[in-house]
Length: 115
Image 1 (tube, rainbow, N blue to C red):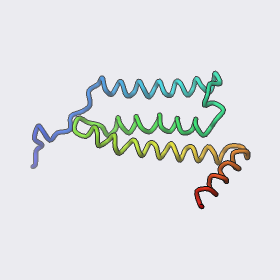
Image 2 (tube, rainbow, N blue to C red; image 1 turned 60 degrees about the vertical axis):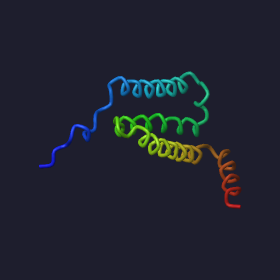
Image 3 (cartoon, rainbow, N blue to C red; image 1 turned 45 degrees about the horizontal axis):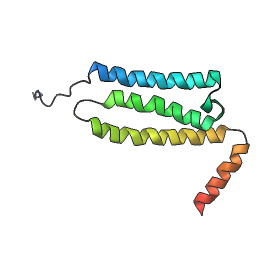
Image 4 (tube, rainbow, N blue to C red; image 1 turned 90 degrees about the horizontal axis):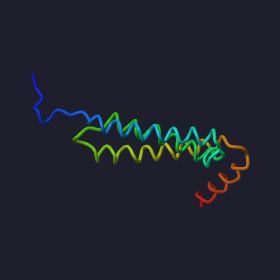
């Protein structure tokens, strides 16, 4: 059987780094929930709210699942663009679900992009 060398084994992340990532995710979620309840900035703009929720959920979760001592920069380079893309998709979804006054803005932006 092929045994792993001590250097080849993926070492788990330190507990402090995992706790820091989780704490920052929790603070982001707390701010978004408080913004809705207390009527702070993104509560009345669903496109920003959807984007921030998707970023706060996806990026830290992907970091916690994929990060180890050997691939820190590589995972950050892969997960950040994916999280930004999901935020963009969430923004587009929020624009589509918004009332009809934003449909005019979406139509104008689409017309400008197609030129």
